[in-house]
Length: 342
View 1 (spheres, one colour):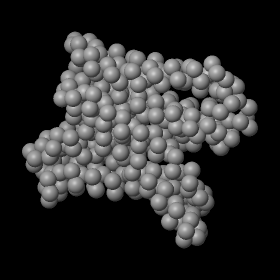
View 2 (tube, rainbow, N blue to C red):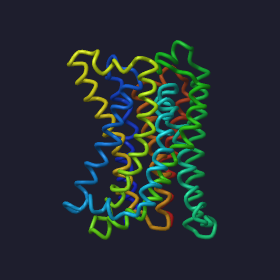
View 3 (cartoon, rainbow, N blue to C red):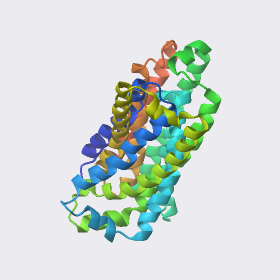
């Protein structure tokens, strides 16, 4: 076990997750629902199969999927479908709140629910061991950092004019965005539930000789199938309702291929968080591996706010707001190292 290596691997994935929404800014003449589901094809269908195929022993992927317990596969799909609701509303959260504030609120709730609920459902008493107590402490520190960043977001909202807000985030809507972010945060935690439910699939992959770094890759196929189903149903509904199904064929060939390029780039960047999360989690002490989810979310929030600074979403705010934001980011990053206190 190498916790520092684990954190570093999770951090690489977090950079991808925090960056995935940026390529959408280069998509032209497509509605949100059109480019969202195309990135989903890359992130939730192509990437999981591709990475699973190349990270298990050659020629064994279909055998692993066939031998995996049916119950585990269906549970992974079910939680994936619930996560899909979170994924949908997460995209809307960024649409209405921006990369920085949107990810901070939604992922904060995801971190808390996704980290604490699985051991509680399993009947574990988190206060009965040092590792459990450290997990709770780590989540508490992360939530404190998230609250500080959220406060910075409130100050930002007060300091900017309506015109300045919409210049930073075109469809900025604080109340609507916060309500959607709350739903996104709760439902997005289902992804971790799916990974936990898929542990029997991981065990089958282990029996076939899969490196421990990549054991969760076959499980992600099922979780993401569920997520894709939820998203495609909603996006097709919007395509029909808004007549945006014409988007795919109404643009010129250069614009079409430009949009495919950047939506696929967004999709693969998104998938990187869970590919590296699986690798990083395998390096954490077994009794604190559940804390890996909180580490992922905390780093996602930290990097997303750094992107928010780069994209000038905080432009026009005062020095006090910027200091509070930076303090929040630092606390979040520090919370990830609680795992090393074991």
